[in-house]
Amino acid sequence: MSTPAILTAAICGAETTRLMTPHLPITADELGEEAARCREAGASVIHLHVRRDDGTPTQDRALFQKAIDAIRRRCDVLVQTSTGGAVGMSADERAQPLECTPPPEMATLNAGSLNFGDDVFLNPFPLVREFARRMREKGIAYELECYDVGHVEACLRLAQEGVIALPAHFDFVLGVRGGIQASEENLRFLIGKLPAGCTFNVAGIGRAQLAMAELALKLGGHARCGLEDNVYLSKGVLAKGSFELVGKVAELARAAGREVATPAQARQILRLG
Ligand code: KMH
Ligand code: ZN
Image (cartoon, rainbow, N blue to C red; front, top):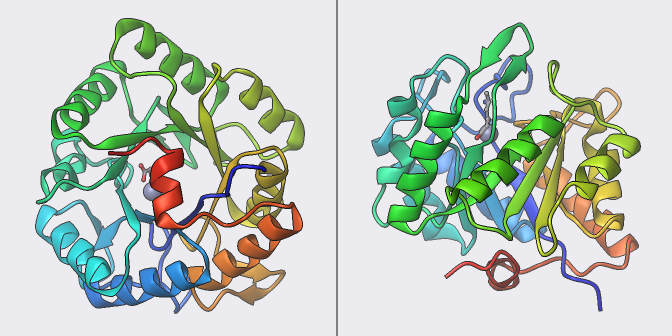
């Protein structure tokens, strides 16, 4: 029996705007409703960012608390809070969701710096070590966000230092302008770098999203989709929400002979609790 596929819905992000799609959730209630629709479609993990009422990105702890509570009221799902935030935010600003009560079950740990479009997304080693320390202290599981092959190697270095524990759960983000691009060759190369027992998720950016999800599922990995990374369901057709993309990826999982993981199965696969 193959491992059930964990589907992550990245429902909001920091860069997607209402000009790009009118279906972007912004308020806590909108995030809660969208998370519930994604759960219904097969997602067991919600990758969460929050926005101010005017739509601008923030890592404000109170807004995270409100959004997490709104999600919890509607469904059982693993909430994975972002510690990446938006390009240019300070480390202290980015770390705020780790202070929610109870602490989130999971958070992202961005493994290295890169050009992010025309900006630079900064994740120097001291910041990664400090975020990992805070997550360990609070019992928050981390997903290691890798945008390039050097980020995977940085994680292995951090494991040698004892900063992170192996086996770990990785997220290969493929197709950021400045990171490794979305191709089968690149994905297979990244997978080949993983020590035994590690699990991986794949987040394809833009038009690569569904093709990379399909490939990840065929190669035994897990898949992320949603409006944070891509707003289209098919060429020229906007997704009415991340839930439509999750529905498509759930079909791809079944076609690949994979069951779609429930939140309980996802917790087990990710070694949570
Ligand atoms: N918004 C990107 C610059 C994360 O959530 O941890 C970073 C990001 C990663 O979205
Ligand atoms: Zn994110």
